[in-house]
Image 1: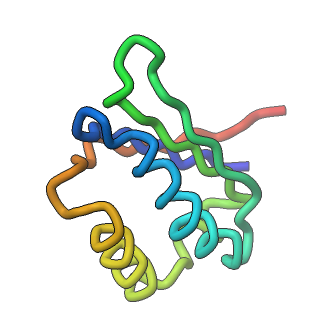
Image 2: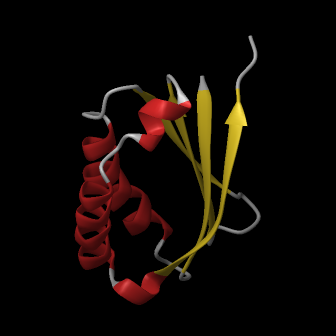
Length: 99
């Protein structure tokens, strides 16, 4: 299993809007992609403007094979839903799960 780890900074007071739009737009889209397993949203309890999204994929190839044009289209829908300047994408990491 592969973990896609994404870190965001959201504007103060926008975290719930971000989380709900993420669920309705991104999770709905990703759940239809081959190899998608699960998605979690982590909110820093000391700083609600820091949000981490963790996506579990069967393989790195599944994650890599999500069409770029569909990712871009989904990101545009998300930006339109919450506002372009309400969040900043800070960091992406990849982890391998060893069980």
